[in-house]
Length: 265
Image (cartoon, rainbow, N blue to C red; front, top):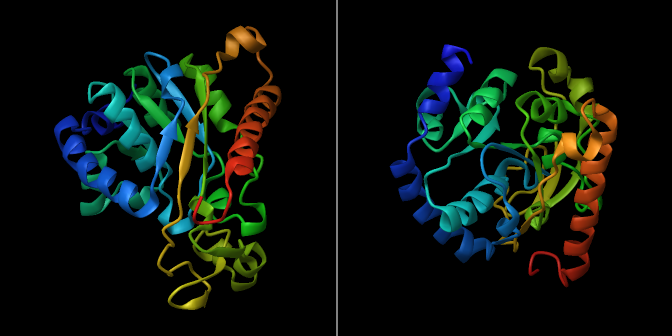
């Protein structure tokens, strides 16, 4: 465990997080009527929560989980979120770090899991968060399997989690991967997508600056997967990844079948 990662996870502040959760919980209930279930099966000790990512710039997967988790278990075990560099630098980064946002590195993940904390990872990242509305109920990590290696290396279970509703906060037309290449932002800024969406008040938007709709968000935490117990002492990465995505897709399909109307839930 290197000193940088140790210092990073030490910034988590339970008192600050508790105060922040009071306001977050009020907003989630009032604006998104958020619900989270399945926490009764959550394991003790370190665990890697693997989730789909929804809502583009306004993704609320972590706040919905955190509000429910801390309400049920209290503030003795932190939730750490693997985050893009821009979220963990500067004044904003220092604030978010107190609520558990950490760098998306193998070292930070290992340090957080080794401390007994919960680590949330979105393997699909922006690729998933900006998926087209036509694929809003599809689990797609874009072929990324690093999360499996992280869980194996730290000897912790994978806790799959699925969420529905967030991708209905506006109409996502395309990730804009071709546009990113045409504008060369993939070379200049290491940005692989330029999303195009439709919403209010700006209508068609090259970047999702529209106000998110008050869509109902429902999150479900699934039973933990013990990799060694399920796949043996030398698990195949691709096989584990396929199993995790299959379990998540089945759960997301159930949530989609129970959803009567977009936005309204």
